Length: 144
Image 1: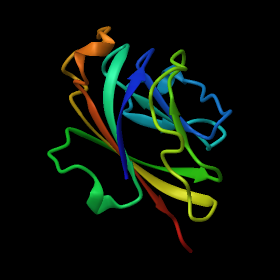
Image 2 (image 1 turned 90 degrees about the vertical axis):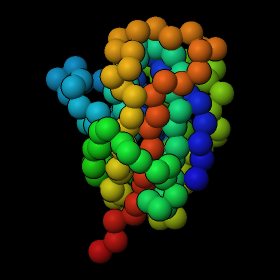
Image 3 (image 1 turned 180 degrees about the horizontal axis):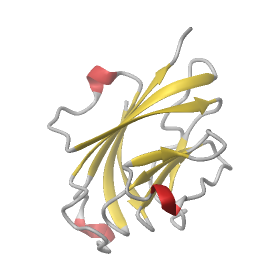
Image 4 (image 1 turned 60 degrees about the vertical axis):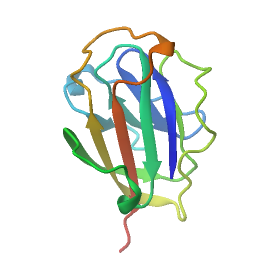
């Protein structure tokens, strides 16, 4: 499990392999999260336009921070490589290296939980303000 502060921009937080730049689809904007067209990247749509958010990434659903959570999305995603966190224009975000490394490449169920998305909608928060939104991202390998 990894918990850290990430910096978002354009209401987006990306979780994808290094070198993959997820492309935002405005048609899916109201959704909490969606998998990009190639199936190998995840975009979380944040409430704030830019600023810090708190993120926990885990493979153990019992290790996620306790609720209550305000929103939930469950998706399927192909995970073939280690995943890192990024945002469209924030390259110097002090996030850890790989936030998830699959035991085996293949399909995963991804559960995204959110709270605080409505606290400061479409606002630009100072990086020193501290996170007002929290996300938990739970990856689980799909086995046959």
